Image (tube, rainbow, N blue to C red; front, side):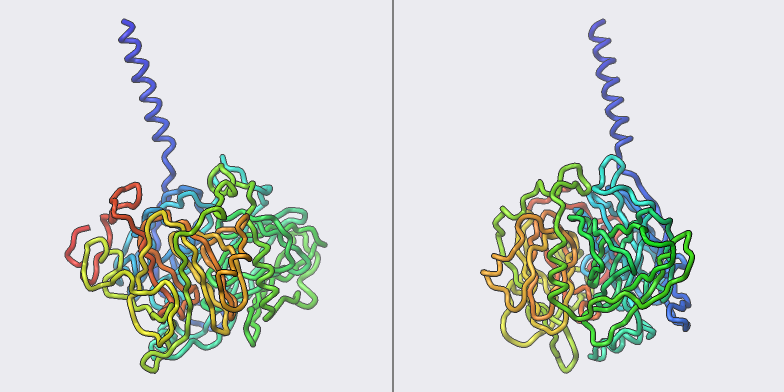
Length: 538
C-alpha cells in the first residue's frame, strides 16, 4: 500500500514537473512578410522602393528576450533577396544569419522561413536586406527586444517608446547605384537624410512624462548627430548593454549602430525640433522631425539646435563615456559586471586594416589586402557538406602586410571558446564602421594614429560596454575583445554597404572538431541549396 501511494506521489510530481516544463517553454511568434516593389515619396518625388507587407520602412518587430521568431519571407522582387538581423546573435545558429556566406538568397517568387531566437538579449536592433544594394531602396525596419517581466530594468518604465530609423538616402534607383559600383566607381554623396523614411515626421507625448527614443543608423555611409531642441537625453542602452546613465545634449550614431535614450518632456508646452545631421562630411545634410507636446500652444520655432560637424576628438571623447552599468542586469538576472573580461588574457591578436584600392582599374575595398568576393556556394553550406574548391581557411592574414590588394574568398579560422583581441586599423581619411555577426564584443579602446602594443595601456578593462558595431575614426584605431562562444561562420564587414559590397568583409569560422548540438544546431530542414550544394540533402 505504501509502495502504491509512493508510486502515485512520484507520478504526480513527474506530471507537475512536465507541465511546468511545457509552461516554461519560450513563446513563439509567427509572421508572414511579403517583399515587393512599390512607389514611395520620401523626398516628394516618386521613386521605386522595397516594401515589406506594403510598408516603408518595414514592420517593426517588437519581441521579448528568448522569444522564438518564425518568419516566412516571400520574395516578390525580380532579384534574389535576403534579410539579415543586425545585432541578433543567432546563438548556435549561423544558418539563420541571412548573409550570402551562410544562406542561399531567396529566388524571385519563392520563400524562406527564418527560425531564430532572441536568446539572452535585450535592446534596440534593426533588420535590413543583405543582398546586392537592396538596402538603398528600403526593406529595413526596427527590431526591439524587450526584457522579460521578471527581469528589472535600471530605469523607470517610460510612458511609451519611439523607434527612429535615421539614415542617408538617394533619389537614384538601387539598380542604377549597383551598376555604378560594378563599373568601378564610388557612390555619390547622398541626397538627404530621412527619419523613418520621411523628410518630416512628428512624435507626440504628454508634458511631464518620460519617453524612450530608440535611435538607429540605417544609412549606407554617413554618421549622424542626434539632438532634440531644449531637451537633454539620458542614454540608457547601447545595442543590448545597459550603460551608465549620463545626460547628453546630442549623441553621435554611426552606420549600423543603435542606442536608446530617455527624454522627459519637462519644458514649456510647445513643439520642438528633433534634428539629425551628418558628421565628418564637407556638406552637412540635416533631417528634422517634431517633438509635439499634447498640450502644445505653439508650433516649432527658432533656429535648429546646433550640433558638431567634423570634430573627431569630440566624438571620440563622447564614445569613451558610454560605459557598462556594472550593477545592472541585461537579459539575465546576474549583473553585467559579473563577467570580468579585463582579467582574461587573449589567446590571439588580430589586426585588420581596411584600404581603398584599385584592382584591374576598378574601385575595390579590402581587409588586409584581400577584397572579398562571394562564391556561388555559401561558405556555411560548403563547410557543412565538405565541398572542396569554395574556400580555404587562412586565406586572409591576421595582420596587415605590404602589397597590392587582390580578390579572394577570405575566411579566417578561430577555435570555439577562444578569447581574442581584434584591432581595427584605419589609415584612410574617412571614418569606418565595422560589424561582427553572431556576437557582441567589449569595445575597450580608441586612439589616433597607429596601434601599438603600448596602446593597451589606454584600454578600458573595467566597464567597457558590449556592442556589435564599432566606429573607427579617420587615421585611427579601435580595439575590441571577443569571447568566441558561438560556433558558426560569422561575417565581419564594413557596415558601410558600398564598401561591404566591393570587398571590405570576410568570414570568421569559429569551429571545434567535437560535433554537438550543445555547440551548434543542425542544418535547417528547409535550407535553400544553391551552387555546388544543389542536390544535397538538408
